[in-house]
Image (cartoon, rainbow, N blue to C red):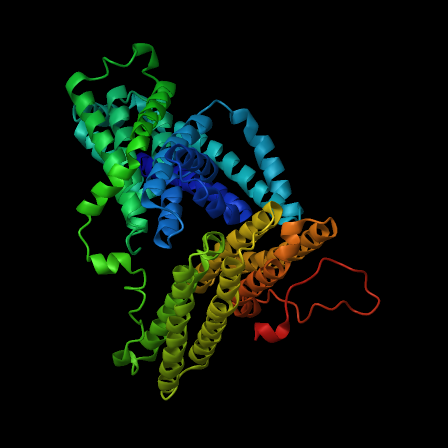
Length: 567
Protein backbone atom coordinates (compact mmCIF):
# COMPACT_ATOMS: atom_id res chain seq x y z
CA UNK A 1 0.00 0.00 0.00
CA UNK A 2 2.85 2.35 0.82
CA UNK A 3 4.49 1.65 -2.54
CA UNK A 4 1.22 2.29 -4.38
CA UNK A 5 0.71 5.57 -2.53
CA UNK A 6 4.26 6.62 -3.38
CA UNK A 7 3.84 5.77 -7.07
CA UNK A 8 0.51 7.61 -7.31
CA UNK A 9 2.00 10.69 -5.64
CA UNK A 10 5.05 10.60 -7.90
CA UNK A 11 2.96 10.18 -11.07
CA UNK A 12 0.54 12.89 -9.96
CA UNK A 13 3.34 15.37 -9.30
CA UNK A 14 4.97 14.49 -12.62
CA UNK A 15 1.70 14.96 -14.55
CA UNK A 16 1.16 18.32 -12.85
CA UNK A 17 4.68 19.35 -13.85
CA UNK A 18 4.08 18.36 -17.49
CA UNK A 19 0.69 20.09 -17.54
CA UNK A 20 2.16 23.27 -16.06
CA UNK A 21 5.00 23.38 -18.61
CA UNK A 22 2.44 22.91 -21.39
CA UNK A 23 0.23 25.63 -19.88
CA UNK A 24 3.06 28.16 -20.03
CA UNK A 25 3.99 27.16 -23.57
CA UNK A 26 0.40 27.36 -24.82
CA UNK A 27 -0.13 30.80 -23.31
CA UNK A 28 2.98 32.22 -24.92
CA UNK A 29 2.32 30.59 -28.29
CA UNK A 30 -1.22 31.98 -28.39
CA UNK A 31 -0.08 35.46 -27.39
CA UNK A 32 3.02 35.77 -29.56
CA UNK A 33 2.95 32.83 -32.01
CA UNK A 34 2.48 35.06 -35.05
CA UNK A 35 5.79 36.82 -34.35
CA UNK A 36 7.94 33.69 -34.07
CA UNK A 37 8.44 33.08 -37.80
CA UNK A 38 9.29 36.70 -38.55
CA UNK A 39 11.73 36.76 -35.63
CA UNK A 40 13.42 33.55 -36.72
CA UNK A 41 13.56 33.88 -40.49
CA UNK A 42 15.12 37.34 -40.54
CA UNK A 43 18.28 36.07 -38.75
CA UNK A 44 20.55 34.11 -41.08
CA UNK A 45 23.80 34.66 -39.15
CA UNK A 46 24.52 31.55 -36.99
CA UNK A 47 25.24 33.59 -33.87
CA UNK A 48 22.08 35.67 -34.27
CA UNK A 49 19.99 32.59 -35.07
CA UNK A 50 21.41 30.83 -32.01
CA UNK A 51 20.53 33.80 -29.82
CA UNK A 52 16.98 33.93 -31.19
CA UNK A 53 16.62 30.17 -30.67
CA UNK A 54 17.77 30.56 -27.08
CA UNK A 55 15.21 33.31 -26.44
CA UNK A 56 12.41 31.25 -28.00
CA UNK A 57 13.33 28.22 -25.87
CA UNK A 58 13.22 30.34 -22.72
CA UNK A 59 9.84 31.71 -23.77
CA UNK A 60 8.39 28.34 -24.84
CA UNK A 61 10.20 26.41 -22.09
CA UNK A 62 11.10 23.71 -24.60
CA UNK A 63 13.95 23.23 -27.06
CA UNK A 64 11.86 20.53 -28.77
CA UNK A 65 9.15 23.10 -29.54
CA UNK A 66 11.75 25.36 -31.16
CA UNK A 67 13.16 22.44 -33.17
CA UNK A 68 9.70 21.56 -34.52
CA UNK A 69 9.05 25.24 -35.27
CA UNK A 70 12.21 25.80 -37.30
CA UNK A 71 11.82 22.43 -39.03
CA UNK A 72 8.51 23.64 -40.39
CA UNK A 73 10.12 26.88 -41.58
CA UNK A 74 12.88 24.92 -43.33
CA UNK A 75 10.32 22.64 -45.01
CA UNK A 76 8.54 25.55 -46.66
CA UNK A 77 11.79 27.24 -47.65
CA UNK A 78 11.60 30.16 -45.21
CA UNK A 79 14.77 29.08 -43.42
CA UNK A 80 18.01 27.39 -44.43
CA UNK A 81 19.01 24.14 -42.73
CA UNK A 82 22.26 25.61 -41.36
CA UNK A 83 20.37 28.55 -39.81
CA UNK A 84 17.83 26.14 -38.33
CA UNK A 85 20.62 24.04 -36.79
CA UNK A 86 22.10 27.17 -35.21
CA UNK A 87 18.69 28.11 -33.80
CA UNK A 88 18.21 24.67 -32.24
CA UNK A 89 21.70 24.75 -30.69
CA UNK A 90 20.74 28.05 -29.07
CA UNK A 91 17.41 26.53 -28.01
CA UNK A 92 19.24 23.73 -26.15
CA UNK A 93 21.00 26.37 -24.07
CA UNK A 94 17.70 28.21 -23.61
CA UNK A 95 16.03 25.12 -22.13
CA UNK A 96 18.95 24.78 -19.68
CA UNK A 97 18.46 28.41 -18.65
CA UNK A 98 14.80 27.59 -17.98
CA UNK A 99 15.90 24.82 -15.59
CA UNK A 100 18.18 27.30 -13.81
CA UNK A 101 15.35 29.81 -13.46
CA UNK A 102 12.81 27.28 -12.18
CA UNK A 103 15.20 25.66 -9.71
CA UNK A 104 15.80 28.89 -7.78
CA UNK A 105 14.28 29.08 -4.25
CA UNK A 106 11.26 31.18 -5.20
CA UNK A 107 8.47 29.14 -3.60
CA UNK A 108 7.34 32.28 -1.78
CA UNK A 109 6.15 33.58 -5.18
CA UNK A 110 3.56 30.81 -5.59
CA UNK A 111 0.56 32.55 -3.91
CA UNK A 112 1.20 35.77 -5.85
CA UNK A 113 1.61 33.94 -9.17
CA UNK A 114 -1.61 31.96 -8.68
CA UNK A 115 -3.60 34.98 -7.50
CA UNK A 116 -2.41 37.29 -10.24
CA UNK A 117 -2.47 34.64 -12.97
CA UNK A 118 -5.93 33.42 -12.02
CA UNK A 119 -7.27 36.97 -11.83
CA UNK A 120 -5.93 37.94 -15.24
CA UNK A 121 -7.06 34.73 -16.92
CA UNK A 122 -10.55 34.55 -15.44
CA UNK A 123 -11.50 38.20 -15.04
CA UNK A 124 -10.02 40.05 -18.02
CA UNK A 125 -11.17 40.22 -21.65
CA UNK A 126 -7.99 41.24 -23.46
CA UNK A 127 -6.57 38.24 -25.32
CA UNK A 128 -2.88 38.84 -24.62
CA UNK A 129 -3.58 39.77 -20.99
CA UNK A 130 -5.52 36.52 -20.48
CA UNK A 131 -2.66 34.52 -22.01
CA UNK A 132 -0.19 36.31 -19.73
CA UNK A 133 -2.38 35.19 -16.81
CA UNK A 134 -2.19 31.64 -18.19
CA UNK A 135 1.61 31.87 -18.19
CA UNK A 136 1.71 33.08 -14.58
CA UNK A 137 -0.62 30.25 -13.54
CA UNK A 138 1.62 27.76 -15.32
CA UNK A 139 4.77 29.01 -13.57
CA UNK A 140 3.00 28.82 -10.21
CA UNK A 141 1.90 25.25 -10.91
CA UNK A 142 5.45 24.29 -11.94
CA UNK A 143 6.73 25.47 -8.56
CA UNK A 144 3.93 23.56 -6.80
CA UNK A 145 4.75 20.42 -8.79
CA UNK A 146 8.40 20.66 -7.74
CA UNK A 147 7.32 21.03 -4.12
CA UNK A 148 5.17 17.90 -4.46
CA UNK A 149 8.06 15.99 -6.00
CA UNK A 150 10.36 16.91 -3.15
CA UNK A 151 7.76 16.06 -0.49
CA UNK A 152 6.94 12.75 -2.24
CA UNK A 153 10.52 11.58 -2.48
CA UNK A 154 11.81 12.79 0.88
CA UNK A 155 10.11 10.11 3.08
CA UNK A 156 11.77 7.26 1.19
CA UNK A 157 15.30 8.55 1.68
CA UNK A 158 15.54 6.63 4.95
CA UNK A 159 13.90 3.43 3.70
CA UNK A 160 15.54 0.49 1.97
CA UNK A 161 14.05 1.01 -1.50
CA UNK A 162 15.67 4.30 -2.48
CA UNK A 163 19.16 3.53 -1.17
CA UNK A 164 19.23 0.26 -3.12
CA UNK A 165 18.05 1.92 -6.34
CA UNK A 166 20.46 4.81 -5.77
CA UNK A 167 23.33 2.39 -5.21
CA UNK A 168 22.48 0.48 -8.39
CA UNK A 169 22.33 3.63 -10.52
CA UNK A 170 25.54 4.89 -8.95
CA UNK A 171 27.31 1.65 -9.88
CA UNK A 172 25.82 1.46 -13.40
CA UNK A 173 25.96 4.91 -14.98
CA UNK A 174 24.94 3.57 -18.40
CA UNK A 175 21.61 2.42 -16.95
CA UNK A 176 21.17 5.83 -15.32
CA UNK A 177 21.94 7.48 -18.68
CA UNK A 178 19.39 5.30 -20.52
CA UNK A 179 16.82 5.94 -17.79
CA UNK A 180 17.17 9.69 -18.32
CA UNK A 181 16.86 9.31 -22.10
CA UNK A 182 13.75 7.13 -21.89
CA UNK A 183 12.07 9.42 -19.36
CA UNK A 184 12.75 12.53 -21.47
CA UNK A 185 11.35 10.83 -24.57
CA UNK A 186 8.25 9.50 -22.82
CA UNK A 187 7.55 12.83 -21.10
CA UNK A 188 8.39 14.85 -24.24
CA UNK A 189 10.40 17.20 -22.04
CA UNK A 190 14.03 17.14 -20.97
CA UNK A 191 13.29 20.19 -18.79
CA UNK A 192 10.82 18.17 -16.70
CA UNK A 193 13.28 15.28 -16.28
CA UNK A 194 16.12 17.55 -15.18
CA UNK A 195 13.83 19.38 -12.74
CA UNK A 196 12.69 16.01 -11.32
CA UNK A 197 16.29 14.87 -10.92
CA UNK A 198 17.22 18.12 -9.20
CA UNK A 199 14.27 17.72 -6.81
CA UNK A 200 15.20 14.10 -6.05
CA UNK A 201 18.91 14.68 -5.44
CA UNK A 202 18.06 17.52 -3.06
CA UNK A 203 16.27 15.17 -0.64
CA UNK A 204 17.75 11.69 -1.24
CA UNK A 205 21.03 9.83 -1.21
CA UNK A 206 21.15 9.46 -5.01
CA UNK A 207 24.85 9.61 -5.96
CA UNK A 208 25.78 12.81 -7.75
CA UNK A 209 27.40 10.83 -10.59
CA UNK A 210 24.13 8.95 -11.18
CA UNK A 211 22.20 12.22 -11.25
CA UNK A 212 24.66 13.60 -13.80
CA UNK A 213 24.23 10.49 -15.96
CA UNK A 214 20.43 10.86 -15.81
CA UNK A 215 20.70 14.51 -16.87
CA UNK A 216 23.03 13.62 -19.74
CA UNK A 217 20.56 10.95 -20.82
CA UNK A 218 17.75 13.51 -20.64
CA UNK A 219 19.69 15.61 -23.13
CA UNK A 220 19.85 12.66 -25.50
CA UNK A 221 16.14 11.91 -25.00
CA UNK A 222 15.31 15.58 -25.51
CA UNK A 223 17.05 15.43 -28.89
CA UNK A 224 15.02 12.35 -29.88
CA UNK A 225 11.67 14.05 -29.24
CA UNK A 226 11.75 16.49 -32.22
CA UNK A 227 12.84 13.65 -34.52
CA UNK A 228 9.70 11.76 -33.57
CA UNK A 229 7.49 14.86 -33.87
CA UNK A 230 8.83 15.75 -37.34
CA UNK A 231 9.03 12.22 -38.70
CA UNK A 232 6.43 12.95 -41.41
CA UNK A 233 8.03 16.17 -42.61
CA UNK A 234 9.63 16.12 -46.06
CA UNK A 235 13.21 17.19 -46.49
CA UNK A 236 14.88 19.52 -45.69
CA UNK A 237 12.79 20.04 -42.54
CA UNK A 238 13.65 16.66 -40.99
CA UNK A 239 17.39 17.30 -41.33
CA UNK A 240 17.43 19.85 -38.49
CA UNK A 241 16.29 17.42 -35.72
CA UNK A 242 18.75 14.83 -37.06
CA UNK A 243 21.57 17.37 -36.85
CA UNK A 244 20.49 18.28 -33.32
CA UNK A 245 20.58 14.61 -32.31
CA UNK A 246 24.02 14.24 -33.87
CA UNK A 247 25.34 17.26 -31.95
CA UNK A 248 23.55 16.97 -28.62
CA UNK A 249 23.45 13.18 -28.50
CA UNK A 250 27.09 12.59 -29.43
CA UNK A 251 28.24 15.25 -26.94
CA UNK A 252 26.12 13.63 -24.21
CA UNK A 253 27.64 10.20 -24.96
CA UNK A 254 31.14 11.73 -24.94
CA UNK A 255 30.42 13.39 -21.58
CA UNK A 256 29.13 10.06 -20.21
CA UNK A 257 32.35 8.36 -21.34
CA UNK A 258 34.38 10.99 -19.48
CA UNK A 259 32.16 10.49 -16.42
CA UNK A 260 32.64 6.71 -16.46
CA UNK A 261 36.41 6.94 -16.91
CA UNK A 262 37.28 9.77 -14.53
CA UNK A 263 34.18 10.11 -12.36
CA UNK A 264 33.31 13.51 -10.92
CA UNK A 265 36.88 14.32 -9.91
CA UNK A 266 36.98 17.18 -12.41
CA UNK A 267 33.92 18.79 -10.79
CA UNK A 268 34.44 20.64 -7.45
CA UNK A 269 33.13 18.71 -4.45
CA UNK A 270 31.39 21.85 -3.18
CA UNK A 271 29.12 21.69 -6.24
CA UNK A 272 28.02 18.08 -5.68
CA UNK A 273 24.50 19.31 -4.93
CA UNK A 274 21.19 20.10 -6.61
CA UNK A 275 22.39 23.55 -7.67
CA UNK A 276 25.66 22.08 -8.87
CA UNK A 277 23.71 19.66 -11.06
CA UNK A 278 21.79 22.59 -12.57
CA UNK A 279 25.04 24.43 -13.29
CA UNK A 280 26.56 21.33 -14.88
CA UNK A 281 23.49 20.94 -17.13
CA UNK A 282 23.80 24.60 -18.07
CA UNK A 283 27.51 24.21 -18.80
CA UNK A 284 26.92 21.12 -20.95
CA UNK A 285 24.49 22.99 -23.19
CA UNK A 286 26.74 26.06 -23.28
CA UNK A 287 29.50 23.83 -24.70
CA UNK A 288 27.20 23.07 -27.65
CA UNK A 289 27.63 26.68 -28.76
CA UNK A 290 31.09 25.66 -29.98
CA UNK A 291 29.31 23.98 -32.92
CA UNK A 292 27.78 27.26 -34.15
CA UNK A 293 30.61 28.17 -36.59
CA UNK A 294 30.29 24.73 -38.21
CA UNK A 295 26.55 24.59 -38.91
CA UNK A 296 27.07 24.69 -42.69
CA UNK A 297 29.52 21.76 -42.50
CA UNK A 298 27.07 19.85 -40.30
CA UNK A 299 24.29 20.55 -42.79
CA UNK A 300 26.42 19.11 -45.61
CA UNK A 301 27.24 16.08 -43.47
CA UNK A 302 23.54 15.46 -42.83
CA UNK A 303 22.92 15.67 -46.58
CA UNK A 304 25.32 12.74 -47.01
CA UNK A 305 23.97 10.76 -44.08
CA UNK A 306 20.30 11.09 -45.00
CA UNK A 307 20.09 8.97 -48.14
CA UNK A 308 16.86 9.84 -49.94
CA UNK A 309 15.80 10.28 -53.52
CA UNK A 310 17.30 13.55 -54.77
CA UNK A 311 14.36 14.39 -56.98
CA UNK A 312 11.97 14.00 -54.06
CA UNK A 313 14.24 16.10 -51.88
CA UNK A 314 14.37 19.01 -54.29
CA UNK A 315 10.67 18.94 -55.17
CA UNK A 316 8.58 19.98 -52.15
CA UNK A 317 5.45 18.73 -53.89
CA UNK A 318 6.75 15.20 -54.50
CA UNK A 319 4.88 13.85 -51.46
CA UNK A 320 1.97 16.26 -51.48
CA UNK A 321 1.03 15.38 -55.06
CA UNK A 322 0.03 11.92 -53.88
CA UNK A 323 -3.71 12.16 -53.45
CA UNK A 324 -5.18 10.74 -50.25
CA UNK A 325 -8.41 9.79 -52.06
CA UNK A 326 -8.37 6.00 -52.30
CA UNK A 327 -11.03 4.70 -54.76
CA UNK A 328 -10.90 1.26 -53.14
CA UNK A 329 -12.42 2.67 -49.93
CA UNK A 330 -15.51 4.20 -51.52
CA UNK A 331 -17.62 1.26 -50.35
CA UNK A 332 -16.56 1.92 -46.72
CA UNK A 333 -17.95 5.40 -45.97
CA UNK A 334 -16.13 5.86 -42.66
CA UNK A 335 -12.74 5.18 -44.24
CA UNK A 336 -13.69 7.22 -47.31
CA UNK A 337 -14.56 10.23 -45.14
CA UNK A 338 -11.14 9.90 -43.49
CA UNK A 339 -9.59 10.01 -46.96
CA UNK A 340 -11.44 13.24 -47.70
CA UNK A 341 -10.22 14.67 -44.39
CA UNK A 342 -6.63 13.81 -45.28
CA UNK A 343 -7.03 15.28 -48.77
CA UNK A 344 -8.29 18.56 -47.34
CA UNK A 345 -5.22 18.63 -45.09
CA UNK A 346 -3.05 18.03 -48.17
CA UNK A 347 -4.72 21.03 -49.81
CA UNK A 348 -3.83 22.98 -46.68
CA UNK A 349 -0.19 21.96 -47.05
CA UNK A 350 -0.20 23.14 -50.65
CA UNK A 351 -1.72 26.48 -49.64
CA UNK A 352 0.81 26.80 -46.84
CA UNK A 353 3.63 26.21 -49.31
CA UNK A 354 2.20 28.93 -51.55
CA UNK A 355 1.66 31.50 -48.79
CA UNK A 356 4.86 31.16 -46.73
CA UNK A 357 7.32 32.76 -49.20
CA UNK A 358 5.00 35.58 -50.35
CA UNK A 359 6.83 38.42 -48.60
CA UNK A 360 10.21 36.98 -49.58
CA UNK A 361 9.07 36.97 -53.23
CA UNK A 362 7.89 40.55 -52.80
CA UNK A 363 11.35 41.51 -51.53
CA UNK A 364 13.53 39.48 -53.91
CA UNK A 365 11.45 39.84 -57.06
CA UNK A 366 12.47 36.42 -58.41
CA UNK A 367 10.43 36.23 -61.60
CA UNK A 368 10.73 32.47 -62.11
CA UNK A 369 9.89 31.70 -58.48
CA UNK A 370 6.82 33.93 -58.67
CA UNK A 371 5.63 32.16 -61.82
CA UNK A 372 6.28 28.77 -60.20
CA UNK A 373 4.11 29.67 -57.22
CA UNK A 374 1.36 30.88 -59.52
CA UNK A 375 1.41 27.50 -61.24
CA UNK A 376 0.91 25.71 -57.91
CA UNK A 377 -2.70 26.85 -57.93
CA UNK A 378 -3.39 24.19 -60.55
CA UNK A 379 -2.51 21.48 -58.00
CA UNK A 380 -5.00 23.02 -55.56
CA UNK A 381 -7.71 23.11 -58.24
CA UNK A 382 -7.08 19.46 -59.10
CA UNK A 383 -7.34 18.50 -55.43
CA UNK A 384 -10.72 20.27 -55.12
CA UNK A 385 -12.01 18.59 -58.28
CA UNK A 386 -10.92 15.22 -56.90
CA UNK A 387 -12.67 15.89 -53.59
CA UNK A 388 -15.91 16.87 -55.30
CA UNK A 389 -15.95 13.72 -57.42
CA UNK A 390 -14.99 11.50 -54.47
CA UNK A 391 -17.68 13.01 -52.23
CA UNK A 392 -20.21 12.49 -55.01
CA UNK A 393 -19.23 8.82 -55.23
CA UNK A 394 -19.51 8.43 -51.44
CA UNK A 395 -22.95 10.02 -51.57
CA UNK A 396 -24.25 7.11 -53.62
CA UNK A 397 -24.13 5.02 -50.43
CA UNK A 398 -26.47 5.38 -47.51
CA UNK A 399 -24.94 7.74 -44.95
CA UNK A 400 -26.11 8.77 -41.51
CA UNK A 401 -26.86 12.44 -40.91
CA UNK A 402 -23.60 13.18 -39.07
CA UNK A 403 -21.51 11.70 -41.90
CA UNK A 404 -23.34 13.80 -44.49
CA UNK A 405 -22.77 16.88 -42.40
CA UNK A 406 -19.08 16.03 -42.04
CA UNK A 407 -18.67 15.59 -45.80
CA UNK A 408 -20.48 18.85 -46.49
CA UNK A 409 -18.28 20.77 -44.05
CA UNK A 410 -15.07 19.26 -45.45
CA UNK A 411 -16.14 20.10 -49.01
CA UNK A 412 -17.02 23.66 -48.02
CA UNK A 413 -13.62 24.12 -46.40
CA UNK A 414 -11.92 22.63 -49.48
CA UNK A 415 -13.73 25.27 -51.55
CA UNK A 416 -12.44 27.95 -49.16
CA UNK A 417 -8.90 26.59 -49.50
CA UNK A 418 -9.22 26.73 -53.29
CA UNK A 419 -10.22 30.37 -52.88
CA UNK A 420 -7.03 30.84 -50.84
CA UNK A 421 -5.04 29.46 -53.79
CA UNK A 422 -6.75 31.95 -56.09
CA UNK A 423 -5.91 34.82 -53.73
CA UNK A 424 -2.23 33.88 -53.82
CA UNK A 425 -1.98 33.02 -57.53
CA UNK A 426 -4.28 35.68 -58.97
CA UNK A 427 -3.85 38.57 -56.56
CA UNK A 428 -0.65 38.39 -54.50
CA UNK A 429 1.70 36.92 -57.11
CA UNK A 430 0.64 39.40 -59.86
CA UNK A 431 1.27 42.19 -57.36
CA UNK A 432 4.75 40.75 -56.73
CA UNK A 433 5.37 40.71 -60.50
CA UNK A 434 4.18 44.29 -60.81
CA UNK A 435 6.43 45.37 -57.95
CA UNK A 436 9.38 43.65 -59.63
CA UNK A 437 8.61 45.08 -63.08
CA UNK A 438 8.19 48.68 -61.91
CA UNK A 439 10.97 48.56 -59.29
CA UNK A 440 8.60 49.75 -56.57
CA UNK A 441 9.83 49.84 -52.98
CA UNK A 442 7.74 49.92 -49.82
CA UNK A 443 8.51 52.44 -47.09
CA UNK A 444 10.30 50.94 -44.10
CA UNK A 445 7.17 51.28 -41.97
CA UNK A 446 4.95 49.82 -44.68
CA UNK A 447 7.27 46.86 -45.20
CA UNK A 448 7.24 46.05 -41.47
CA UNK A 449 3.44 46.29 -41.36
CA UNK A 450 3.05 43.87 -44.28
CA UNK A 451 5.60 41.46 -42.81
CA UNK A 452 3.80 41.43 -39.45
CA UNK A 453 0.39 40.89 -41.04
CA UNK A 454 1.77 38.10 -43.25
CA UNK A 455 3.40 36.41 -40.23
CA UNK A 456 0.12 36.51 -38.37
CA UNK A 457 -1.76 34.98 -41.29
CA UNK A 458 0.83 32.19 -41.57
CA UNK A 459 0.51 31.47 -37.85
CA UNK A 460 -3.26 31.38 -38.20
CA UNK A 461 -2.93 28.82 -40.99
CA UNK A 462 -1.14 26.47 -38.62
CA UNK A 463 -3.82 27.06 -35.99
CA UNK A 464 -6.60 26.47 -38.55
CA UNK A 465 -5.17 23.13 -39.67
CA UNK A 466 -4.82 22.08 -36.04
CA UNK A 467 -8.49 22.98 -35.55
CA UNK A 468 -9.37 20.94 -38.65
CA UNK A 469 -7.68 17.89 -37.12
CA UNK A 470 -8.65 18.25 -33.46
CA UNK A 471 -11.99 20.15 -33.69
CA UNK A 472 -11.00 21.71 -30.37
CA UNK A 473 -13.51 24.39 -29.29
CA UNK A 474 -10.95 26.56 -27.49
CA UNK A 475 -8.65 26.54 -30.51
CA UNK A 476 -11.60 27.38 -32.76
CA UNK A 477 -12.48 30.35 -30.54
CA UNK A 478 -8.86 31.44 -30.63
CA UNK A 479 -8.86 31.26 -34.43
CA UNK A 480 -11.95 33.46 -34.64
CA UNK A 481 -10.37 35.97 -32.26
CA UNK A 482 -7.29 35.97 -34.47
CA UNK A 483 -9.52 36.73 -37.46
CA UNK A 484 -10.73 39.87 -35.69
CA UNK A 485 -7.15 40.77 -34.76
CA UNK A 486 -6.03 40.46 -38.40
CA UNK A 487 -8.92 42.65 -39.55
CA UNK A 488 -7.99 45.27 -36.95
CA UNK A 489 -4.34 45.14 -37.99
CA UNK A 490 -5.32 45.53 -41.65
CA UNK A 491 -7.41 48.63 -40.84
CA UNK A 492 -4.64 50.17 -38.75
CA UNK A 493 -2.03 49.58 -41.46
CA UNK A 494 -4.32 51.16 -44.05
CA UNK A 495 -4.78 54.24 -41.84
CA UNK A 496 -1.05 54.56 -41.20
CA UNK A 497 -0.34 54.17 -44.90
CA UNK A 498 -2.74 56.99 -45.77
CA UNK A 499 -1.17 59.17 -43.10
CA UNK A 500 2.25 58.60 -44.69
CA UNK A 501 0.82 59.65 -48.05
CA UNK A 502 -0.59 62.83 -46.50
CA UNK A 503 2.81 63.45 -44.93
CA UNK A 504 4.38 63.31 -48.42
CA UNK A 505 6.31 60.04 -48.07
CA UNK A 506 7.33 59.30 -51.66
CA UNK A 507 7.74 55.51 -51.32
CA UNK A 508 4.29 55.23 -49.77
CA UNK A 509 2.78 57.15 -52.66
CA UNK A 510 4.49 54.98 -55.29
CA UNK A 511 3.59 51.71 -53.57
CA UNK A 512 0.09 52.70 -52.48
CA UNK A 513 -1.88 50.45 -54.82
CA UNK A 514 0.27 47.39 -54.15
CA UNK A 515 0.36 48.03 -50.40
CA UNK A 516 -3.41 48.41 -50.05
CA UNK A 517 -4.20 45.48 -52.36
CA UNK A 518 -1.77 43.27 -50.44
CA UNK A 519 -3.40 44.22 -47.15
CA UNK A 520 -6.83 43.39 -48.52
CA UNK A 521 -5.65 40.10 -50.04
CA UNK A 522 -4.01 38.95 -46.79
CA UNK A 523 -7.13 39.84 -44.84
CA UNK A 524 -9.33 37.88 -47.29
CA UNK A 525 -6.90 34.97 -47.17
CA UNK A 526 -7.09 34.88 -43.38
CA UNK A 527 -10.91 35.00 -43.48
CA UNK A 528 -11.04 31.96 -45.75
CA UNK A 529 -8.62 30.08 -43.51
CA UNK A 530 -10.55 30.92 -40.33
CA UNK A 531 -13.84 29.61 -41.75
CA UNK A 532 -12.99 26.13 -40.40
CA UNK A 533 -13.96 27.35 -36.91
CA UNK A 534 -17.59 28.25 -37.67
CA UNK A 535 -19.20 24.77 -37.81
CA UNK A 536 -17.29 23.68 -34.69
CA UNK A 537 -18.39 26.71 -32.69
CA UNK A 538 -21.93 26.47 -34.03
CA UNK A 539 -22.26 22.83 -32.93
CA UNK A 540 -21.10 23.75 -29.44
CA UNK A 541 -23.38 26.77 -29.06
CA UNK A 542 -20.51 29.25 -29.10
CA UNK A 543 -21.96 31.67 -31.69
CA UNK A 544 -24.69 34.26 -31.56
CA UNK A 545 -27.29 34.45 -34.31
CA UNK A 546 -26.07 37.85 -35.56
CA UNK A 547 -23.78 40.75 -34.74
CA UNK A 548 -26.55 43.38 -34.44
CA UNK A 549 -27.54 44.90 -31.12
CA UNK A 550 -31.14 44.91 -30.03
CA UNK A 551 -32.83 48.26 -30.66
CA UNK A 552 -32.01 50.61 -27.84
CA UNK A 553 -29.48 48.28 -26.21
CA UNK A 554 -26.20 49.66 -24.95
CA UNK A 555 -23.17 48.85 -27.00
CA UNK A 556 -21.15 45.88 -25.80
CA UNK A 557 -18.13 44.02 -27.06
CA UNK A 558 -18.59 43.13 -30.77
CA UNK A 559 -19.63 39.54 -31.30
CA UNK A 560 -18.30 37.42 -34.11
CA UNK A 561 -20.74 35.25 -35.94
CA UNK A 562 -22.53 35.58 -39.19
CA UNK A 563 -25.10 32.81 -38.78
CA UNK A 564 -24.99 31.97 -42.46
CA UNK A 565 -21.33 31.00 -42.17
CA UNK A 566 -22.05 28.90 -39.12
CA UNK A 567 -24.42 26.52 -40.79
